[in-house]
Length: 556
Image (cartoon, rainbow, N blue to C red; front, side):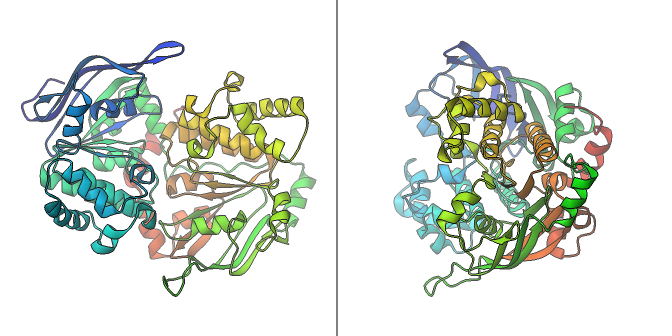
């Protein structure tokens, strides 16, 4: 795209490479695009497409082994190619605001919110007294009402949505010309996601700022973007009006991305584990594998009174079936899962696993249960030891339970890698050398090492792009069919929940507001809250109508 006088950002021929042990690897090649004031442009593409490299180049935060081979970056009329770190520090915050993906990692855990907001302004010569007044105003503008309490808080005392709003306030503090938002809502429920994006776009539009939105969520891109940039293997393969690209994708890769996008109307046939008729009838006759009955957990104290985190929650997980817990931040779904995993004890109620009450088991009793109940966390990069190789990571549970000798464990690890469809050449790799999807497969392999009966899957797909999500969902379905696993699936992504669930439990404020068969909950929700959750799904109507019909037959 040619340079425009009105362009806030103009990127021309940007080429970045990485120096690795195996030689030079291309990051992005000949990237060119521009953004105008008040415009929102979304960059989409799978892991490894070059989205993050592009964003890092635009904020001057490329990795140490990265090198810009050529091109031009012009921001508000300033050429940034070749800028040193001192100049970049003067640009970040002043001309360029950045909203990163993970507020838990981006906010300083030992500084109060007020201090961090003020610092974003005083570093650009705003007097501290003026910065303090401006900080309260910014907190209000991003939708945080109790500004004094929020300002005095540390990051861990705020919810995920509140922390993300603080990051937006920091990005907007100096009225920058460009805001780069890198997966700003990937771990948030749909209601908070809508509020965050509404606020970001409204504030940016009011200030005449351009927004570059990097996202793996095609629904978010459709709802929010004026224009779309599709990246694949370091190159831009398609760009143009967002609605036109969704209506008439020209490149095969864009078509594949759309085909892989989860849709509320595209219902997968649930897998049936292999069994003889006699085995099937015996499974049907058995009680559910997991039964949660009238569960209550209250963390409030006389100093900090409040409602119970979990209040009279009941549901079940059938053998070889999948039950999903959905709800907004603070709904109680994570606390419920922690009780099921023995990480919290209930104040009232029972957790029956295979007919046995495990809610009040001792640590010694839980040691045996660990072999039967395993967990896959949201962020595999954080949950996998970066010092270990894949072989060590997957074999660790076997060593902890003294199962088999060294050679047997090696064979078991090899078999598990094959089960999660990872090449054996990765056996001695470290987590940092893998993509997000590969790391999640390693986490699943590790969870399967002890032959569990129940997997608790806590937001396992939230940070993955659509095509990788589709692959992991297919893998989970295959494992359930072949191994007879039962899943307790926790997610804020309702389209994903519909693909994997037999039963759905909708939670709000610690209570169950609706539950039932997946088809029933999604097709005929009886509660206004469930209806509002479904209405907030980004791009719902469009993706349901177009993706599931016109692209439903494509194979990714």
